[in-house]
Length: 199
Image (cartoon, rainbow, N blue to C red; front, side, top):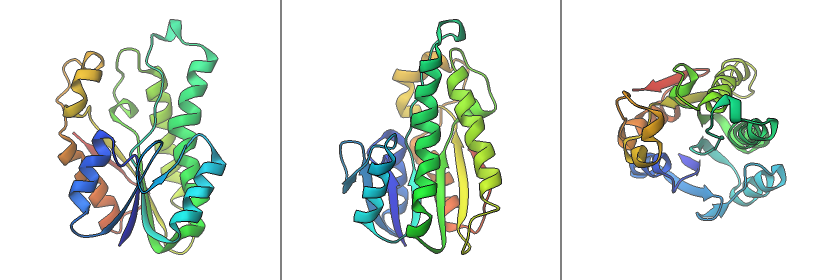
């Protein structure tokens, strides 16, 4: 299969590449690096990426950011950042990519453990993760040509504990290599509308 991985050089994306590269043709994309560059907050940039890459069999999104702060310190703009980046960035990757996905292809998006476990300063992350879950559950029933849509919800990634560990006290970290199995399941199985929780 020809697989486009957005966020391919991040912690999870690198694990996904390592898992899938020996079986598939991989195309890497990122904001500043990769075979193609893309800004997921800019629909025109997403369109330009697809035009450059052409038809693919699968699209994987391992990217997206939200603001981490106490709810009492958050502003409307802080929440909007997560909505535009992690939520709508991935949603637009699907909307703009439908015509570029071969029949029976798949989209795989990324949320996180905050879709079902509250963590300190994580209200924006939880809001976005839960919205992604709802989008995938419903949109998967409406995609044409046998196209599938799934979501991977990994626990805090072991290799990122130095950055995010303070928010996830008591959580068992997940190695990126194990998280990558969820993406492999999404791409290489026939399931759709699913959230694969990797813990």
